[in-house]
Length: 110
Image (cartoon, rainbow, N blue to C red; front, side, top):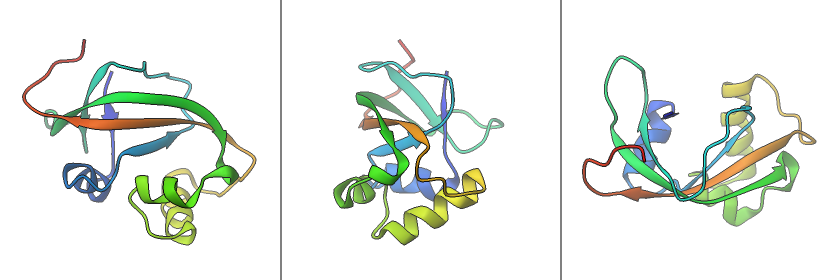
């Protein structure tokens, strides 16, 4: 299993400015596991992240500090990015929040 990000978000991860992601996918990542991250399926992994925390949350309940962990400065920026990915902002949607850390070296999913 891999984590796919739009290129600008992947670059924020590599720069250490994005350490959280919210997903509505039914596929569940496991805490303490390492996953490759990429921006398209044609190329290999750009890096690896370890999931250090996982929890459920309503989209509307994102905090200002979590907005920063998502790589954004304001709720409006985060909403715009969400809409570009998922088509609509539905604040009552329950999402899975994954907090992660960048892993050095050429790790493999374990």
